[in-house]
Amino acid sequence: MSLASKIKEIFSQNLLDTLTKIGQIAENHGLKAYAVGGFVRDLLLEKANFDIDIMVEGDAIPFAENVGQELNADCKLIERFHTAHIFLDKLTIDFSSARKEVYRRPGELPEISFSNLRDDLYRRDFTINALALSITPNQPFELIDLFGGESDLRKGIIKVLHTNSFLDDPTRLYRALRFADRFKFVLDSNTEYLFDKAIKISAPSTLSIKRIAAEIDKCFKEKYPLSLLNKYRSSGLLEYYHKLFKGQTRPDFSFSMVRAMTTRLKSKFPGIIENAVFWSLLLSTLPLSEAQTLLNNSGLPHSVVLQVTSALSSWQVILTKLSLAETKLEIYNALKDACPETLALIYLKNKNKEIENKINQYVNQLYSIKPSITGKDLVEAGIEPGPQIRQILEKIIEKKLECPELTRKEELNLAGIPNI
Ligand code: ATP
Image (cartoon, rainbow, N blue to C red; front, side, top):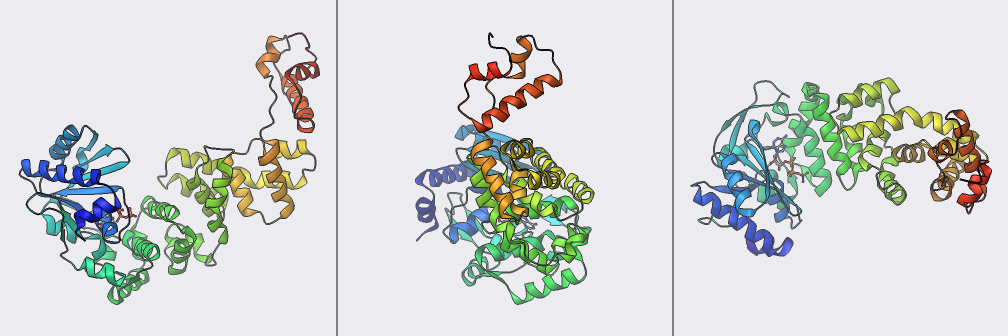
């Protein structure tokens, strides 16, 4: 089957038309354009991948602007990197200029210069990611395979393009394990040799914490994060994120429960962030101050950092309170200030059935119990602002926990203000 037919079958006629149009616009600009990277790899594997990278031999910026206008799509330019993104329905199309990379110092970002298709493919991590699909009308939907990527895909092999690859950019060590784990591929023997050699000379120590964290973050987005995380542990890659992970070589099966746990909590707490649960679980094995510093240096989105900080700083105290709680009010009070990620973390860390039952009781029954009158109602009814407002509301909650059908009128009676 031709690659054009594959695109039509796996995606849609619409995507085929869009790529054809982009190729046509490139030709009008006198440029050659190619789809590259994961999209091409996954197309050959017959998997849908909605992140499309388009590379042009020439300046991608004016070209992407023009594509944005012609397709009537939002276009975001990143002038500094000579790249641009176009957002089209559920597709993100990234545009970049063909470039050559020179690594002056291992582990640091490379120096970049405009170049051609060959150099751009040669700078890539593995042969299976160095495939290009021409989309210009003179070479429509033709596969360009300069380094044997198609055959490696068929054989199930991860292979670097040159001997220095892992030293130039040790994030490729993490990437190699990620693709091997995802596709159930193996490293080819020379790549495995170079991989072991790079670990032996501690190549990842040249990487910043942010770059390692970005790789771990991608691990948490994989279908089976536990399997990949175990490989990061057993290969020694995790300890470059923090040295205390060195001693932690045993698999932690809780990681395989994060997704199900988050999905379950989502029905009650739609804002729960799955990624924050993964990060909380990983960092919860470090001393709190170390975990917090590491988290602050990891370059994760602010929303994730906030939830992880909250979970890490509160889960142990809440767990202690919960183990002592006996009445519904005590369970409610122990958990009422916990963010959903903290609830998930306590679930995952705890091995005690009684505690689990208490959390279930809170999530399924107690959590949604709220007084229908508020502190503002009480102040408007003439009660002085201060601790008595909290006491009255707590009294109402206590009653409501036993008797959820309590009406607003009965609540007001309990508050001693029947005539509001
Ligand atoms: P995924 O399916 O996980 O998104 P991907 O292959 O699309 O995988 P990206 O990280 O989006 O991965 O990168 C896009 C392409 O850029 C890769 O296919 C590869 O060709 C190239 N690339 C990304 N990171 C590196 C790297 N560290 N070294 C060399 N090439 C890289």
